[in-house]
Image (cartoon, rainbow, N blue to C red; front, side, top):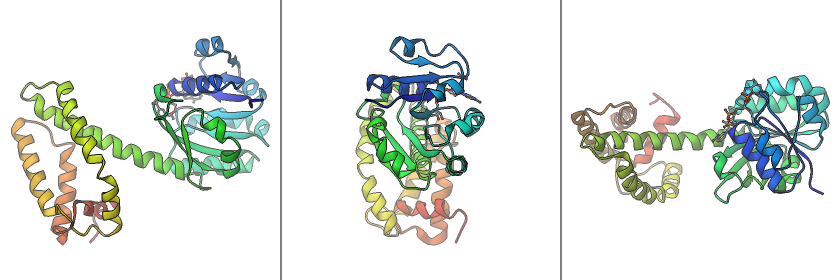
Length: 289
Ligand code: NDP
């Protein structure tokens, strides 16, 4: 029979997780610090626990989805004794060092620990495009894989509990800078009255084509960014023009300014003939050479 699951934290994401477990047919107990966030889940068959103790006593797998690292300790520390021999899957976003600290804390208390990073928004949970990254106990991952896959596809990144979150934040860094670039572009065309919705159509077309090149960028980085096609000198000229166009339009340089500085430095350090991917070395070893 399906294993019981306890979900700690009923924010937007915790509610989506609990809902996916219910749809998957698992008896699901839910708890939230502030009462009153469980109504829809209870209507869908969840059991509401008034305290963390009660939630943990419901048995089965413990899934935490709280705000941050501190909140996970706030919730789990008082019940650490009861968690001995149990399994905790922590889907709260935490820094890699925090995930490692929690894994060590869990080991100290005889708790099986798997850390996870959610590459999804609540509305995507349980849908094919949702994916989650895991690291920590391989046994926990293997034993609970079917349960975890109710949330989205599941990939294991090794016994170092910090790896999932390292990947998570690396992917988020790539995403946020891309979205920031979108805002910059939208601000540029807005100076001529073009709405961001209109700009979005063209950005989707352009960026969708460009992300297809990422595997080649990966290869170029690993091969030392020897120029094959556009050089960093070429990119510098393009960025200089983008910066000038932005200035003329009265658009701030908060987003593209740091990128220009990075490229300028790589060129000044003598890497102008290399491919754009040479910025990787500038980021990896800031201010070196
Ligand atoms: P919400 O802000 O909606 O919910 C936060 C939850 O944490 C609430 O249940 C809140 O309880 C609880 N909480 C905060 N501090 C404490 C504390 N000290 N003790 C006990 N409970 C506490 O966030 P989300 O549900 O959206 O996100 C939860 C986690 O999932 C975060 O780590 C987030 O980074 C991650 N995530 C979220 C995504 C999203 O798109 N939403 C995407 C990927 C990951 P209370 O109701 O009492 O305040």
